[in-house]
Length: 256
Ligand SMILES: Nc1ncnc2c1ncn2[C@@H]1O[C@H](COP(=O)(O)OP(=O)(O)O)[C@@H](O)[C@H]1O
Ligand SMILES: [Mg+2]
Image 1 (cartoon, rainbow, N blue to C red):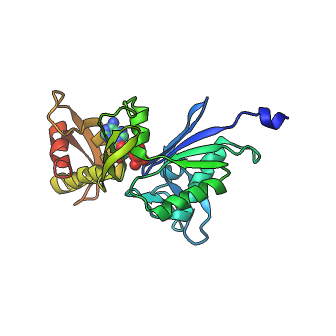
Image 2: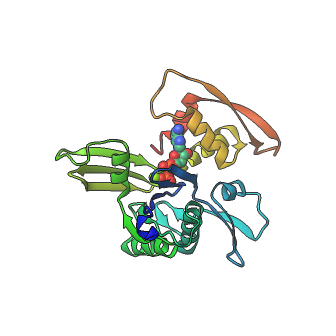
Image 3: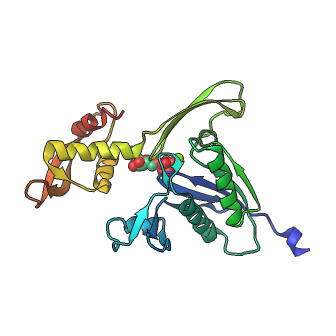
């Protein structure tokens, strides 16, 4: 009796190269964390997942490494991806008896085998039903675009590892182009510029911050300057260098 009265739990998961988001009907986005897992390379034990794991990057003992199981829109390490998915779902529904229905959007570059494997991993994590939705379609619905109309709508999604351009009409993806270039490549371009032009060694986090703060593809009125801290490559000593928005734009240009 009580069972039939219980409301089914519906969950949506965006399994991204950079970040994983979990949405629960009625509760909103309950997980928004980096797709990172800290794992013991010898025993394969998982130490931390998400934000906690990302913070461990570069600070772990030799045997523990923080890995991104999804890379460039493909599943580089399936076993770890499954553990990550289980962990995030476990945080959302604690009861072993509630089997949520799940809609999952995964990178569009994944193969049929990987697609099936993801559905299996979601079921193994406790989902009663799993549906996969194409990422550009989910993005278009989320952006309130008229996806059901018989007219073409174009959507561009730039992620961490890949960028997708899709044309949507009448509720489906008509054509899709995916390139394995994304935000991470922009971070690397900024880091490379700092190394070659200023002999400044920085972590990717610093490069990413600089990209977000000053990055643009086109000249913007606001030509700000930001001080970047790093290590001088010749002396090894900590230094600070002033970087302008124009310089960041120049560094990003070859990748764009
Ligand atoms: N304000 C911003 N300006 C430029 N890049 C950004 C900004 N916010 C996030 N990013 C970049 O977006 C990328 C992550 O996008 P996301 O959609 O979460 O990726 P994915 O779908 O691959 O998980 C990262 O490379 C991050 O640096
Ligand atoms: Mg994405």
